[in-house]
Image (spheres, helix red, strand yellow):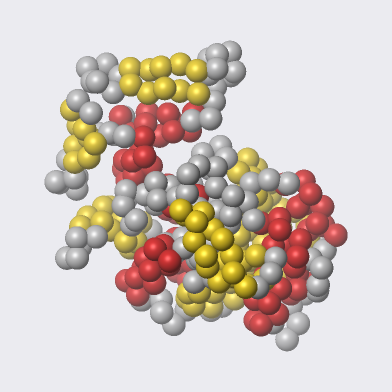
Length: 304
């Protein structure tokens, strides 16, 4: 608590009867919260530096910081191995092949913590920027969306996205595209972080493998569809750039609702949206993801 309230800059915590210790700073406080939740789980036995799950049986892993998300969040998910030896997490009636041991944090955000709320999706046309493994795309499709165009630039994650679409039977609803959204069409350099694939971005905060991927502008996507009921954006920092570029045209007049994570320039982005006729519905800071969650709706009416 002293670290949380900035009384101390750091502290080391050792967990009784184990060899596990955790170095806490202001930057990794959310990781400590995940670890605390993990150790309170009734279905986990801690032995030295290993975690053993009583359910699903047979799961046993080293305790390292990179696996915290999986351990903590799988407590509220049904996890099992399929016939191809993929780890699958089942939540809210949907199944997800995981980029093990990562990805459960994102599932928890959407299906358990409900960071996107409960949007009305019946017969909606939705653009999903930063689709990851299909968590949000399947969330929208399962709520009755007519079409979800899901953009995921990282090839490894895109392959899992396609598998998860098929696994849940939404091939006719979700259109998966292996492209990045940027301020220009062409080639985009993205930093893929194997230890934190959900945080891959144009300007990663840690060591990353840079990949060249095709890119397209948001304006092109919106105008090709004619109208977008919901635009969801989670692109780890590129949100202002792609919206600023789209704002130079009339493209945003063809969007009904925007739901997004904002990692920087939040108030500049709010100003941009207001100039384009959007009203801000919600704005809150999400501590675990270290980003703002913003939702806004347009005063423009859909035109056929």
